[in-house]
Image (cartoon, rainbow, N blue to C red; front, top):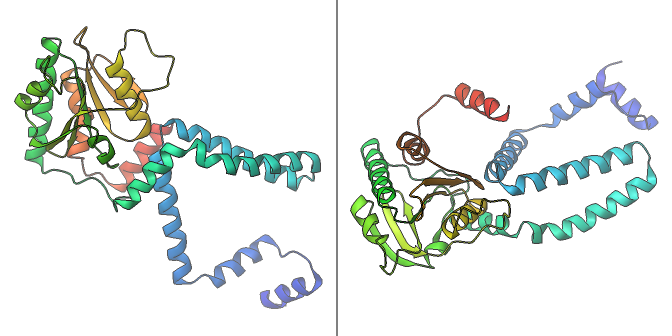
Length: 292
């Protein structure tokens, strides 16, 4: 009896097919459009994971996945009471998800609206990238030396037009002279944040959302809390110079790193403006290393 005869025999008798035969029957129905559909869904899911990775939202996503897996397990084991409770909890959870993930959903929709969901930032050529990195490094060193507070946002994939609208439009080339003038004490824009896109300063005097993290050191003031707050909501890199100590800090993905020297600063900035071209094998190796 061949596979098709066994398939119809099992189907008519109401018996489940053996797993190998189920797998073969599924493969036999796959077409080019089905494969394209699977690849497209995989890319979208990967992009969503990439946007949520290393943010507070990823822990909530893992909790939701665990709850769904537990519900399926309870159903499979015929634990009717637990399954009923979990299914009701999942229903309520899906009602609450839009509220819990409101900032992330808003950012994702903005990303889609800008047509940049599957695209990377517009990177600079090597010469322009090195010039911008050097100007930023020089500006931060000089501001740090004289203990002048500064808050600089470097845009990545997610657009920051809503943040730019809270400040004054500048649209000037990045230079240490421009940044020093903006953050000069008692000037109209020195208390706000500067937004940089590519090699241009887009806006200055911008307002950033403050973090709700209550575990931060009391040494960190409003600038640090604002920089950290923005990094929790988007993928921007935020550079901070303390007005009290002159210490340079970097906020990224909801984490703040202090006492950044020139070498470390350039390591943060270089992948944004001029990322290295690496092979697929190196990308997989780096991803595995990051997960350990």
